[in-house]
Length: 159
Image (cartoon, rainbow, N blue to C red; front, side, top):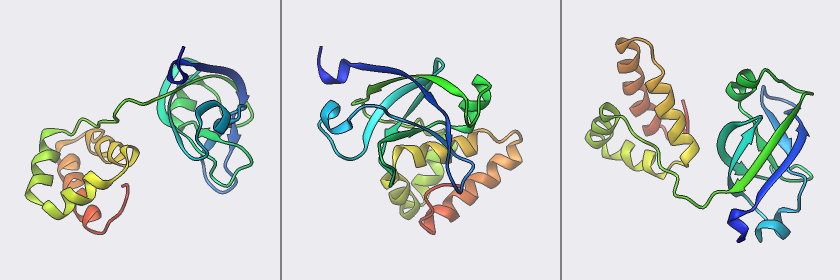
């Protein structure tokens, strides 16, 4: 078994970020020993069986941690202080975001915005796409498409 095939499995308390409506769990293993890295480690995780693609990161914390999104917390019916079953596996696959055709065309028409979008992290590109595709009305989607170009030209990482 190679390092990238190893699955880490544990139960952890969902902790709340001090200043944000954000939550995380602590990774109870030594990241440098397990992955040969001191910094961020891209991973595929599950929280009570719900998939999350993200990263282990130190983030000025005493150990590495991984965020647990509000959406996942809602799906599993858990919040800060609850215990969640976690599995984590290193993710060495390329992180690709499927860009909808209307956004692709708009980015191609605005090379400056395209360059900024392409330089964003996987997570930030994913957030822009999600923001656009979750619009319930076509009118809202079109407004979000235009706003995306404006925000990218201002070098904003996410909507």
